[in-house]
Length: 613
Image (cartoon, rainbow, N blue to C red; front, side):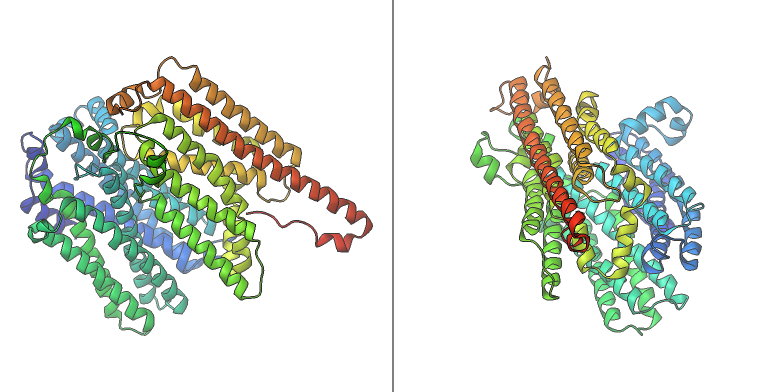
């Protein structure tokens, strides 16, 4: 399939180097690029299939060794990892060659220039990261023996597939933020679906498919198919439109969508007919492989809307820098009412809220009880993520540094505090099956997670999320790139979850209350130091970028930075004080329970407050 795709696209597709204004790199490079891209995706998908067998379909004990079938499947990962690495490096080399107009052979003869180009050309750098992760996963697959270890490898490999689409150059001149997010979702969903189909097809041949395996595969297909179809609408609407559907590129889009729909129908029919003929597995595998090849072809073709050059106009400066325009003023009405949906965080927040409410409903239907305060906290946390990323705060955050600081504070303190107070792990323990509960507990008890639960480590993570990003100049270097904004949002939210899990989470043994209060005080001092650092800066952070954005309502970048630092400081301290009150309350309850234990130990045991998740 890789050879066929490379040959067809290389012969029929445009020469991208010529489109960029350089001389042609020749037919070999034109064929090698789509060939290597298809080979990289194929090898990575096969590795995902092997890990899905070990982690999802035939898993071993949650805290023990892999199953024999799962261990054998890692042999496939060991072989596919180096292939993914080599193919991804070829893609990176050819991407650099097409971007700067120098033949691959000349680049290979000049290693310093090649190294600089691989770092500065972001699409190429994305493939280099994927190559490194592929080689790492392939090497570790030879030494991993546990289910938890294989789960970590699967997460690493999926992360490797996130990087290339996130750093890819968007075809769309407008809305490149939506384009990049949609392409990322599309790629990950496609790899997971195809990998799951390969895994289950392999198990079918080994006569290891039962109703449980079919059910898991069906759930993966349902989630991935919804993500594929919805995420595919965004680049189609941006680059093709209704008029462009009759073009060759548009027909390829329609064919790809039709293949995915047929794949969904096959998966649904097989779900209700477990004894379906093996031909259905072959058909689904063939259809998904053809859809993946079509996706590779589209990445090398020029959409209809891109043939006409869009002249630069001063009024569209924000569209070029941010991907979208903004109102010429910023007030409370705009921050509250001017929404631009974040395609990554908004769906995640809504799905998390819906899943939590469904679990609470299931628990209550079974006769159990669940505090309304916990439900309110979780839903409020999800809404905070939604507001910080998709409301006017999220939209203006990319153009106004002061608003960015406020959004960062919401994601790093308010949202994770509310999410932790929602006790999601405790809810999973109440409604989940025995196997699910055991596997969640095993993952949370893994060595990396235990390390993150330590107060010192939690403080270091919080420090890295502020000083490590802004004081080192990293923010200035990456603020222009769209991928940096969801990455920084994820870092802020993740660091906050680590912090409040260490403060309010349950573990055995749990740090004494005075240690947790000390951690909160240390983080408050960290936020104070960061706020003061922002206030005393003589030059604005990322001043060149924000000067280029030149929002008319921000005449003084330093004043905006100081105002945002003060508001963010207040928001962060509000979360810290709330967490401290929660720790103090649990401390007093613990003391009362301890006194009761001395008088009536059996009765006091039932009064012990439940752990948090």
